[in-house]
Amino acid sequence: MRNPEAPARIRDTDDPAVLANAVEELLRYLTIAQDMIVRVALEDLTIGGQLVRAGDTLVTNLSAGNRDSTFLTGPDRFDIGRSARGRLAFGYGVHQRLGQSLARAEPEIALPALLRRLPELRLAVPAEELRFRHEMATYGVHELPVAW
Image 1 (cartoon, rainbow, N blue to C red):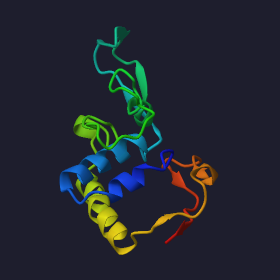
Image 2: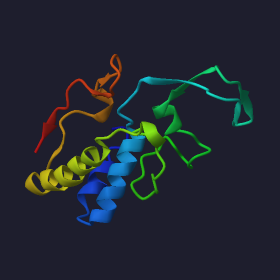
Image 3: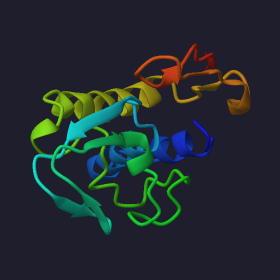
Image 4: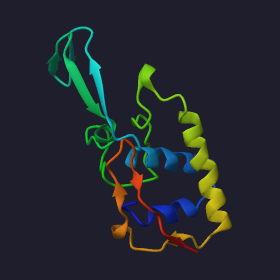
């Protein structure tokens, strides 16, 4: 994670609303699905002032959408205090991922339990040394060395 203070701020609260918002911000900031989404326009429409004709191919990128500065201020900053509602981590509309409720519940339950059980949990290497996985359709790290 690019902001090493973020886990400490999550650690400092047991408030379910704060944790739920932190999970939403994590989903926005570290969008897991990195693949491009391809759609075909079924009718003429205008998107962002650009005419798209029926039959045109549209290619979108969820992680880029989650970093759109017209959507939020400071999109490259991790901030659990911001409202991350409307982010695209699970798609949008009829294309939303079915497992999104479970994907939210897991970190909302696991993070506080993990931090209560291991209050000294921390990265064992500087964050800058983490090797991020970009070669697949999902985003993550190759390994996450921790100490407690």
